Structure formats: structure tokens, C-alpha cells
Image (cartoon, rainbow, N blue to C red; front, top):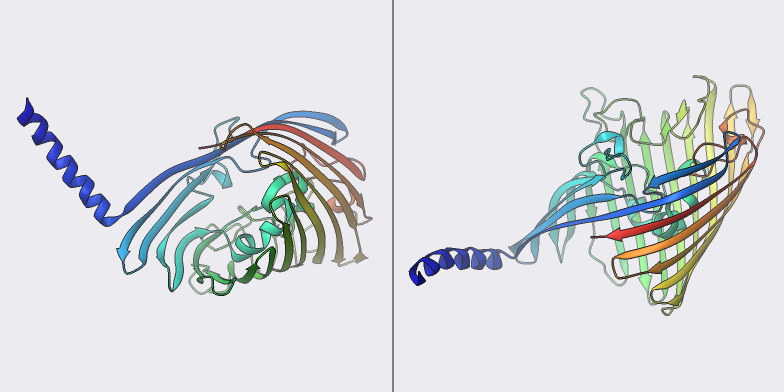
Length: 382
């Protein structure tokens, strides 16, 4: 009996020693966000819905690393997004549509990864916005025009993140078209820098995409993005100040140019092809988070958005005002309950979907210039 136990135990111990020597790790993780939403005007009606992933996208994933020695590690991540209510995968049904990459990480030289990833504007600038950091859909800028709400990822991409030196971190990405004879078609490139020193944090970011057609081979496509257009560029800036452990106040600005657009993922009725010259957006946001206690906090945000809509028949300037609030109580380190509310007022005369209020996460666009959405939800991390 003892010999049998020794025979079984020795190989197991040898395997454990080998694993410890290599210092490899694989972690299964995830998050579930589920709640009830009420929309005041959804195509002229009240709407009551059960919605998954409004504030933080429901997901599960696997990440791992292997110590290669000399401060160098091999890393990977596979992450799936899903809708809890019907079990369907998000991101167009992709198995690992949220993230899927492999790479090398060096404490001295930085991190290089390849695959489907978030671009530098998401990594470094989006956390200064309420939608990218705290409140998700209900505080997103109109139609998520600047992707602050993490609407899409970049395929066929290579990304480099520098080490942090004197509070500064840099990041750069290139997404390949993967098309023979079409190197610039459906490609993307982006760069960003962030700085943190004491209570002050700041970031600048830039992203440019060419195309966004229905192709599934490029870095960007209409199936996974927000706009279908000839090209798009985003210019972003953010600044925040933390008042010890009690409060954080942030300012975020983004400018978005969309050239020769033909569709938007959130429009109920798309514009006629060939009628749009450009859509340009400027988003100005102030948001804050206040901790009553470490496990009980409140957040609020105000965004003013103005747009320049140039068509073949004229020029218009719609505007939006939006206020969002959230109250969160942590039942444990992994489980939270929260309530949210958002109000949007639209002011436009474009003849397009820009004219009616449409809070991201609402059941449907409003039939008027005003819309409110409320949410009560449970969030669990594992």
C-alpha cells in the first residue's frame, strides 16, 4: 500500500517541481453582468427588458504566462463575450471575439503581442471616460462614436506597450488588412501615451482606420465596428485627479472624423448610399466617482457632444446633452449590486437618426428628442 502511494506521489511531485521551475500559470476568469432595464421611449413605447452586459460585458476567458528567464515571459489570452439571457456569443458570434492574442513580455523592454486586441485609445484613454471605466453603455457618447465604450477590437494586429519610465507609458499598434493587392484596405494604426504621477493622470491617443467594409479578413470591418466608411480618425485626451481614496474627477475629450460614411451600427434607418460626405464629432465629458465607504460608491457624468454633418445636399450641426449616474454596493470582493440612470436630449435637424435621442443600451431609439433609461443589476466576478 505504501509502495503504491509512493509510486503515485513521486511522479506527481516531480511534475509539480517542473511546473514550479518553469513558473507557468494559466488562469480561468470571468464576469457576469445581468439586470433589468426600463426605457422611457423606445420607438414610442415604454420598454422593460432583461439585459446582459450593459455596464461591463459578460465574459469568460483564459490567460497564461510562462517564465522564460531573464525577466522575459511568454503570455497569451483567449476571451469570449456572451449574452447571459440566450447563451449566444457576442462580437458577431466569434468564439474568442473579445480578445485572442499571444506574445512576449519583458520587464525591461516592454510587451509585444499579436492577434485580436484592444487598441491604444481603449487601453490608455477610455479609462478617463465614465463609459470605459465605470458605467458602460448608459454613459457612452452618442452612437459610441469614439469607441470609448469598448465597442470593437482590432484583428490581425501587432501591439507594443513600453515599460513605465518616470510615470510615462507608451503604446503603439498596427492592424493588417491581410488582403493581397490591398495593403491599406481595412487596416488600422494607433498610438497613445499616458502619464501618472501622484494623484494626477493624463493621456493622449490617436487612431486611424482605412475602410471598414463587410470583409472579415481586415483589421476592421462593418461586422465588428461602429461605422462603415472610407476612413475614420480619433484624437483623444484625458486628465484625472484622485483625492486620496475618497474621490476621483476626470475630464475626457475626443474628436472623431468619419469620411464618406454609409452606415452606423446603431442607426435604425441607414442613410442612402452616396449621400454622406463626412460626420465629425466632438465629445466633452466630466465625470466623477465618490466613495462613501470602500464598498459603497457613487458615480456621475455629464457629456456634451456636437457634430458636423456634411451631406451632398447641405450641412447641419446636431448636438446632444447627456447625464448619467450610478450607485454601487459591493456585497463581497467579487459580487456587486448597482442601480443606474441616464437622460439624453438630442437637438438636430439632419433628417437622419441624429435627430432623436438614443442612449446606448436603450431598447430602441426614442421618437422624440428626449430619452431616459434606468437599470437595476447584479455583477459577479470569478
